[in-house]
Length: 278
Image 1 (spheres, rainbow, N blue to C red):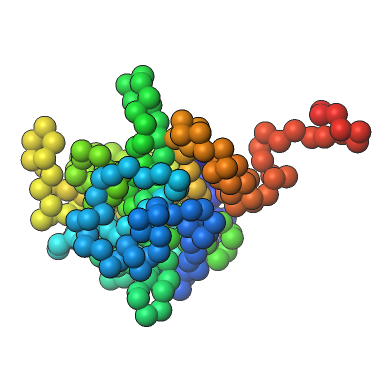
Image 2 (image 1 turned 90 degrees about the horizontal axis):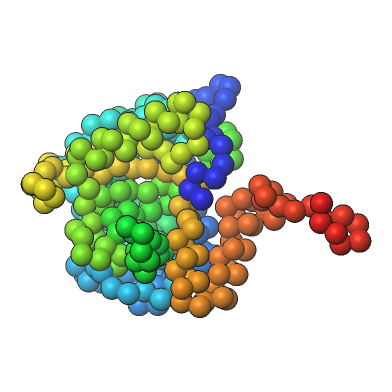
């Protein structure tokens, strides 16, 4: 569902805005139920970061969780096409604010003024042909939803490799540089070919983060975006738990918010006068 719509290319004259002035929202977290252990941004923010690690989460679509801080991040690449589609000016590629945000060192929330607090989604799925139960965003954390002022398209910004969440299971919440390079390049290449896909804004090296895989490798963070990060696994997990009420609530959110209305669903069935379907 993350790539259910067109790639969102901006056409015509583009000047763009700054990241600071980009309209931001939290439609997802405002409409769907949070993890009951941390039901508010304040509750999550007050918890030590290490307590926000793996556990089972039920009757919720997400957990409020902030990215782990990155020491001495190095911004390696920024997609100019992505900047344009997000509604940002090209000069933002070198802004200090963008560098801090895409490294997970800056969020648009504080205890005094509020704002948008980051979150990780809860969903399930199949792995290696078998039902795996709860999966979720084990190393991805959504920052906010940004709306392009020129096109009106809303995108959810997400950091991949931003640290542990309740959905990390036995993993470390990190991403290595080689796989992050692959995601950054392939996402933007597919988009350039006109193939609907999730997008990548930036690639950040985390030089102080040594990640253990087949060998010890440098860590990295990809800032990626899509109009929605909901997926089939979101519904799979609720179905497996028999939570019909949450399925209905989430389906309503998808129709009304992700697609913009029931009448805009791509596979909608037209009803003739008298009640018969066309």
